[in-house]
Image (cartoon, rainbow, N blue to C red):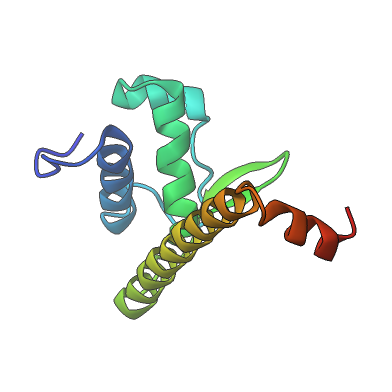
Length: 125
């Protein structure tokens, strides 16, 4: 794997190496990626780590998965698209955290004596 990937999680290191291989044209656009197991063996990581790296590259637009066929190299995204995707992922993660927090707060409120009954009456319970 790449030597300039210190500080990255193992799946990020694998993804960075695959990106470098695509940029260097060692993996051509349209080429089928090896299986997850073969990638895990090649990069000496766990199978789940290889799967997570491939998923990351799919969400970043470097790879496309075709069910029952395989995973293929696609045209590398331009920097503006990559930044936009990263921004969307960050916003989505923030919204998911907000929803989880609000859900937890609602559960606590509904569990309080005297308030749960009112909420239950509104729900028709």
